[in-house]
Length: 130
Image (cartoon, rainbow, N blue to C red; front, side, top):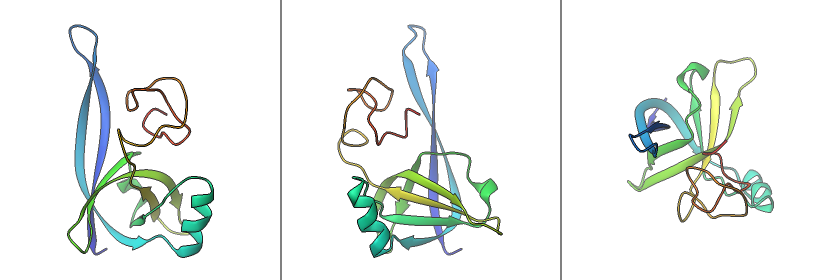
């Protein structure tokens, strides 16, 4: 494992006026990073998804369901990524996290009700309000 990512878990606490206050917990995890392959990228684009990175963690216990990844790439660019898919590699303890960047307030909206991460509602791509 030659890379480090920061996994961010967001929980919510209520203040005295019962407003939800986000609390972020960050932790570093060793991983192997790789770009998403051409065929996977274009197949995902047909479903309006834009995966950019795959992070391979050596042990599935290193992943606790976090939805946000902070990552600095080899060109020293900062990325705030959202986990769109997890995959436990058969016959191993490894887990793959596929992640994408999103624009706007967390991501672009598609339609929907309401949630903590998207002021206009929950959209089909939202993983923060699951």
